[in-house]
Image (cartoon, rainbow, N blue to C red; front, top):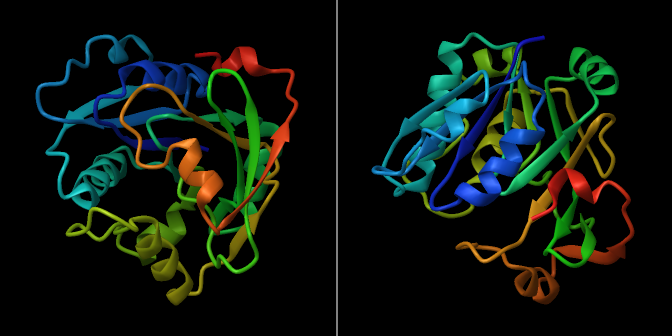
Length: 219
């Protein structure tokens, strides 16, 4: 399968380099930076396509990434935050994408440079997390490739999920998606959801995690 990962970034070069470095080399990365941001370091990775777009409205920036990913004619696209590492095992993940139209994890790891935390949506949250969502081409064609409300800056994940459900998507959302793990990096860059916001929120169940493969996303 031909996979394209859509990433919108703003002042995130440090974590973005880690994110791109962990993607399978043959996966395409469509990265949309803010105007004036230098893309030369990112282009050293094969199959990386960099564009620029105003950071606001943020929904437009994300949709801009999806629009450029469409030009690559992929079999599926993945939505990934610019500081969210995706650890992929294709042998386990690709068979899942043959069975479902959309795949979305309901849990992720968060790493702040010292500790790793397992974060999972509580039952009252109806949708998967935003990063790590995978939409297959058959669903994208039905949705006309529109996954984001281009006028919004917040709650951007809701539009794509609700549109997919409305179009009868075969949806897999689970804490554990075969072959896919999401690690949210938390550092000194601008961040809408720092760890203290997670701890204070009502949507996540958070426990300390003990992992051995931190070398893949060491800050």
